Image 1 (cartoon, one colour):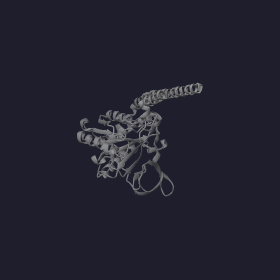
Image 2: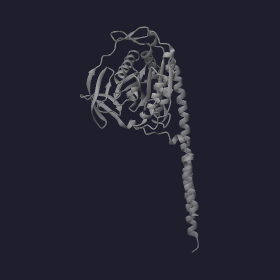
Image 3: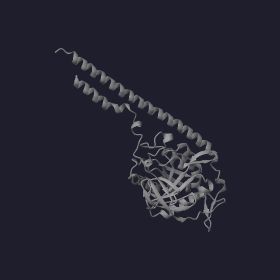
Image 4: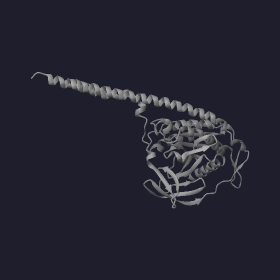
Length: 370
């Protein structure tokens, strides 16, 4: 009888995973960015920046075009000094000729596929295709509405570890060689507080965007100049859109071309719908910088006046898309919750059955004649 009980117990343990939905097992990835948040101050005690994973020597360009360099880090506190005052390009409004559609080609991919948005996705990280895939798809749609050919490669580069960029380099290199795009963008989300990215325009709340450039590649200067052009155009067209430009020590696969950038599309604590709302404006800035802007001898950037409000009519469409995605996420959460509830019931029932069996055996043993 004891053998029988042991066999039942082992069988229940082996069978238990089959009753628990895979989504509840595989929903988390080795992310951890939110645990490495660093606050960067100047020597006067003013907080300049909040970011995860900063290092001494990293630089960042603030909204007022001051260039700062981090010179000291003590646990989650860092200090930066001003090293330069960059010249901000003067932006004028002028019509310009649009390139033919067959020359308008952009490629995108995601190094950290697991990255997600806690308020909307229910998790900050999902092993596999996280919420960042939804953001990249929405940005792709916004770019295509501007007549741009977009290739979004959704190859998985999991897990989220130090070798993720090595794996994504294969994808980025393939895109660069096969498509020869005008721009190559890696889509991410950050790991800091919500208020860092939360922004507002006349249509409601949305998410800011951080541009990241890798100092460790031979194209850094060209990448950085392109990032500054994107940043300047964004400030001229949509001053609430961009957070800053961060220059880290990595390469981020940006050695592949001079128009390769990394976009931090909000943070894990912001609603994904707010990030969706930002994508039409980012698309318009990218389109302007790559295909419609021209510069004169003085370095002035000319912007097509008709572009400024080109995608305002699409805001409601993106709003509807956000609501649909939110409903889908709620259904997904309900399914997961049901699976967890069912698993708990099965475990409880199994434990109860084993307890009753043990009690009966003990009683039987007590009542056995000497």
